[in-house]
Every structure is written in C-alpha cells, then in structure tokens.
Image (cartoon, rainbow, N blue to C red; front, side, top):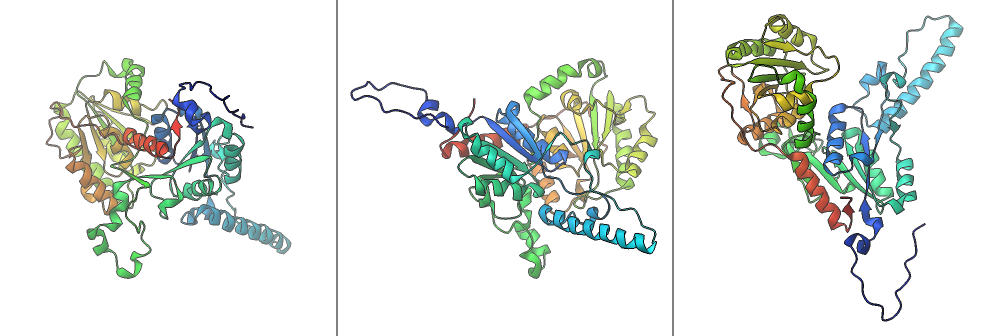
Length: 425
C-alpha cells in the first residue's frame, strides 16, 4: 500500500526537496525484466542495453521457450503460441497412436520429446505474461518495471505486458517486431531492417507479395535506429578484459591479428571456397603480423573449420582456439591490434567496430538483401575495409568507434523522461 501524503498546515513554509520526491519515488525505474528467446546473440543485446542503463544488478531473465527436437524443427516458422498448441495436438495424437499400435503389435519409431532440462536452462524462468504483469502491479511501490525483449519470439509476450499493465511498465522491443510498432513504448532496431522499404528492394519483390514483406511502414517516433546490433562491449568491459587476459596476451609478438569466423546464413552464404580464400589471404599478410589468433563460432560448419585447421593449424605464428572455456573473445577485443571478420555476423562486426581498431571483412560481396545494406553502411562510415591479402597489418588506422548501445540507452532515458519517469542513477 502506498503511504498517504497529508496536506501541509496553512501558512507552512514551502520546502525545497529533491526532484525524486517531487515526482514521487514511484516514478523511478530501479529494476528490469529481460525476455529472451534462448539465443545468445539476441539475449546479449537486451543484457547490453540494461547494462548501459545502469540496471544490470537489478535484472531478471525470463525466456520464451519453444519445443525442440524431431518435428518441432519444421515448426519454427510458426508464432510461439501456435507452435506450442500444434505440438500439444501432435503429442496427443502420437500418444493415442501408441495405444492403437501396441494393440496391433506395430513397431513404433522413436518420437523426440520437448527439449527441456537437457538444455541446462532450468534456472531461467519461463516468460509468462500473467506472472510478469502481476509482479509489476504488486510491487508498484518499488517503481515502474523496465521490460526489455529481443527477437521475434518475444514480441507477443512484451506487447501483451504493455497492453495489460501500461501504467506500471516501460516496454522496449529490440529488433523489428514485424508488426505494429505502437504496441511498445520503444522499438530499437538496425537501419537495415527497413531495407524492404528501399526502392532497390521494392524492385526485387513482385507486387503481389509486397504486402507480406515486413516492415510495411517507415520508422515513427517509437523507433530508435542503430547501425548494428547492441552488445555488452564498452570501455569498462574492455578495460576489465585487458586486465583479466594480461598474462596471456601481453607477451605475444605484435601486431596481434584476431580472426573471427562465423557461419553462413541465408543472407550471406559461403562454404569451403571462402575458407580457402581466407587462408590464402592470411598467408599473404602473415609477414606483417606478430601473432594471429583464430576463433570459430559454435555454428561454424566443420567443412569450413577443417580447411582452416588443416592449412594453418601448425603455423608457429597462428593459435586456433579449440572452443574450450574460458572463451577468449573479450580478451581478443581488448588486446587485438586488428580484426578479420566473416561477413555473416552483424553482432561480431558490431562488437569489433566498437573498439575503433582496424576491421577487415571477408565475404561481404556474398551478402544479399538487408545484410548487403548493412555492409554498405559500415563501409561508407569507414568502419571496415574488405580483406584482400594485400594489407600491411602493422600499419594501423582508426575511426570513431561504433557506439550504438550507449546512444540507444540515451534515447531510452529521453523517452522515459517524456513519460514523467526517471531511471535510478
């Protein structure tokens, strides 16, 4: 229950009080709920934004989960709530068929159940609209609740929370929700998400399917546009990483070249041919390098990693991370003198471009659609250069670091202030 403020006696002198009390302690946001989708690259964006807003010590992670395994891999295109209902029906039908088949003596094929505890995520709460709304209302004396969600699967949960408890929450959706932007207090999304609205993209899409391609409306006042993806890399985290990885990286011969290899996507497809091109170009620049460290992502195909391992695994200047913990990624960002990054990963490029150090991209010419738009943008801003094998890694160059997360956090503060609320400082 909120305390009752009694009126001042007549003639009492007016006292000067801090703004927090004038506005009321119930208008200060002190905590955050993050709604994730189980994908590190998405959840990293939400965590990074909450960190930039100074609420990382008061955050709770909820997760929207989909059934996994077996037939579920064919149902990922469905909205989450429909996917779960379809899967429930399939399970019931399967159980009924088991009974019938056992009576008839038929041999059953294995059925893959929903992937739950095996994912090691039992400590993460399931994102439930009712429980989050109830928490926001029942703890309103602690101030409004900041809700940050990222990814398509989370948008229906986030918008429902906004609908049912708009007086108690400020809801941010990261990445374009592919539907009405007004369902959220703020949408934070890269500029290239609006590529379908450009003239060049419209020419490539037949008229009869244009209305099915999202987004269908240009960004409005609810939308904050970024160049790349949000993340957790900032000056403080790089300084911490530099200290933590000092003993391993400080003795290495300079310059240190870090190579980040991702995984082909539908917007940026490649295979062994790009891996061979990368290896050949790396051999051309090795003379100008003191050390080279190579990392693969969890999704890098074996046919790609095997080419690199076979050709460079035994070179004295080259170290290839084996994927075992601890992950040296933050150490690489802090200590590298230059980077080479495959063109598929917006998140890896966003992080490396936040360092202000030279970033070379390989495979950018293979990107299509909105990924091609992203690469055009970062090239024009001078953040990256194509990797050709003709570079002298010992010759450095720089640019104003990409600062999307901090800039988005400032826009969030402004939007919260327009609502008459504030963030805990």
